[in-house]
Amino acid sequence: MYVNAYLNFKGTCEAAFRFYEQCFGGKNLVVMKNSESPMADKVAPEMRNKVLHARLIIGETTLMGSDAPPEYYEQPAGFAVVVSVATAEEAERIFAQLAQGGKVRMALQETFWATRYGMVTDRFGTPWMVNCEKAS
Image (tube, rainbow, N blue to C red; front, side):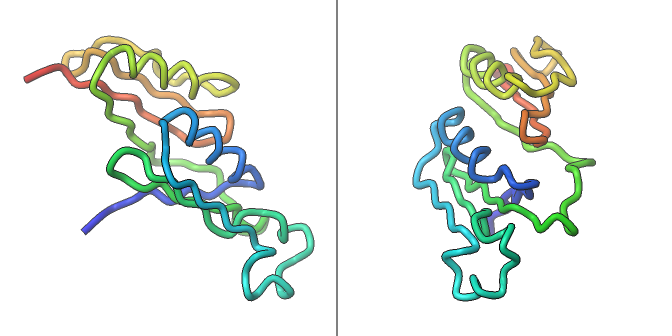
């Protein structure tokens, strides 16, 4: 069994996933547009070039997402996508990239459980927690 995050965007899914590919060193990015679907002729014209489904493999997980039709889009709330990394340097690099154009909710810092932990909402509206646990 696997549990994966599926993110909805307000028209910025492709840009977000290309950014995540670079930021996290993701592999095998797949971006399928509404215009490529068998139902393309039934999609509203303004949604045809938007993302129907995106998939990116990051480490041993898969991140997925799409552009929600405007009437179904909701601002993300009540969750965060957690990125767990092995080194403080990697946490600092990833946090800095996610923070560019975004909003830092908790500065990256040492905590009682982590050498680095911080919370940020990226410029695409996705809330993240970056965590580098202390060795046990």
